[in-house]
Image 1 (tube, helix red, strand yellow):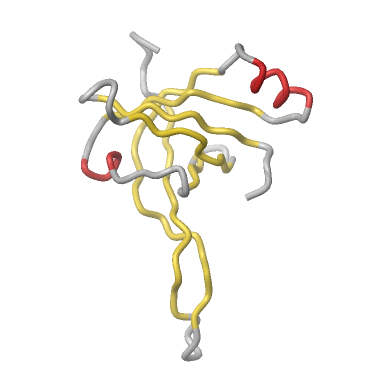
Image 2: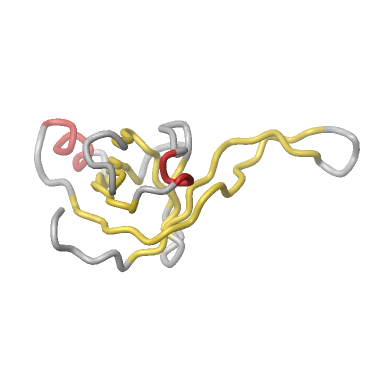
Length: 111
């Protein structure tokens, strides 16, 4: 994933409890962080081959490290802001490179 440009705009949401306006609460996705990202289609491995059969798309995503990026967890979801596609976050690596956060995300699966 070296040398690529971060052309994509993504947002990260967490499942949060929020007031419903009637004195109760509802569980909703709330945006926590937005940034630019680079997507790389993941074409190797058995998990990816199984995902292809089930019409799921798996991507590796690279974003710049920051306080917001370092707070991302696999319990969050990622949204492609331009296309409106929602991805489950399968893996978060904010250790390998201090300047970047690497994610493995998957579209086409139930939230």
